[in-house]
Structure formats: C-alpha cells, structure tokens
Length: 266
Image (cartoon, rainbow, N blue to C red; front, side):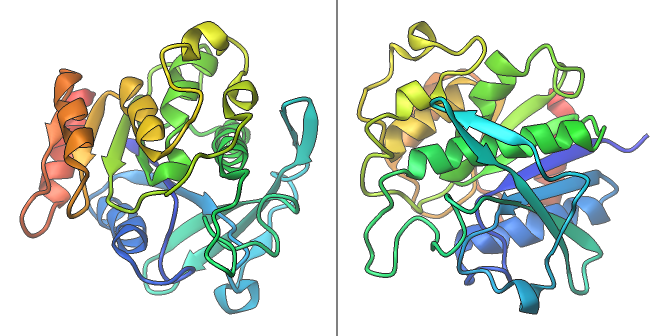
C-alpha cells in the first residue's frame, strides 16, 4: 500500500512568484507522487493569487466550517486547482479577513501584517480540519515555510487523539526566508486550543518571531530537513540539539534522500 504524505506549503509556484520556497513547494510533492507516494498538498490562498488564471474553484462540501481564534469565528473556505503538466491537485485555505485582498507576509508597501501569527493559526487548523473531512490518513506530514510552523504542535498536542493524525510523523523543512518582526502581540493566547495552554507555551518568549516559530516547529517534529540555502546557523544548531534526524541539503536530486527519511520514520 502506498505511503501517504501530507504537504503543508507556504508557497507553491506557479500560483505565487518563483522562489526557493515556492519551487520546492511545487517540485517536492510532484517528485514524491512520481516516486509512488499518495499525496495531498495545501497552501494559503494568498490575495496575490490570480484565481482565474490558476483555475481555482471552491469545494463547497469542504467549506463552511468556522475556526474559532481568540473567541472570534472565522469561516473556512476551501478551493482547489491542478498544476498543469503534473497531475497534482492543490488545496487552498481561504478566508475573507486573513487572505482575500491581502498579499503574503507583507502588504504592498513592504510592511509585515501584524496578525501573521493568527493567519498561520487559521491556516494550520484549516488544513487539519479539511484533511479530517477528506477522510484521508497521512503517514507523514511535511511542513515547509513559517506558515506551517504551528502544525507540529497541533499534531502532537491538540489532534493527537484524532484517528487521522494519531500515528502521523511530522517533518519540518528549514528555509532562509524569514519574517523580520513579531507575529503579533496576542499570538500565545490565540494559539491556545484543546490541550495547548499557557503551561505548554511558557518556555517560549512572549515576542514570537521567526526564530521562536522555527523552534516551536522543531520541538514537536520527528525530523528536520535543511532544505534551503544559507539557513540561520542558530537554527541548525538548535536542530542538532534535538537529537532527532536532521537531513542536510542533498546534492542533486533529493528524491531518494527524502524517501529514505520518510521510510526511517515509519
């Protein structure tokens, strides 16, 4: 039976501009699919995505759930599209407040959104709730980009008793694309959910920035991949301190190295 891998990507080309992160968001799931894995792929429906050009359409049966963040309801909208020439479907997490008419991490003037943390929380929970609705049980959950940094915590602490995720292994890929500022003053309170409370988060700084997000992701991951160029050395040192598998950037085609890592976790 084919192993199942859930890819939670911050960026995927061609829906957003080409970058190290968006290229990997496109190529990795495709290569793993070609290698025989069964995959599902998610990304945020950033406001700079051209829905008509990308041929996105809403999946009514998956939409309609309300995600509550800090006592406020946020309706979840799910859209889907297929990347040409790849036979690969992408699911998009959308919401009028967090994504519609808004860019990615920064606005048109280059200022980071002050609610980036809440946007990441909504994205993470939106993905996991949608996977449950799909009745699909991943063996490996692979997160790429800071938008997915909360997923490992949720898998291990909030969704650990859910049949869809109880046995899943979590992999975090590190990239050099960093946020410059805090993800929001109320981030820790907003993160609280089910068994995740102040005690779980007390060892982290109140000022949650990119470094703190990356540490949170690694603390609840089963393996880490040095996926990008010029990763912050402090993050690599932290990854080494965790005593979990750390895959350094493989030379050339990484398919075999990634497959071997997945298999070693399972």
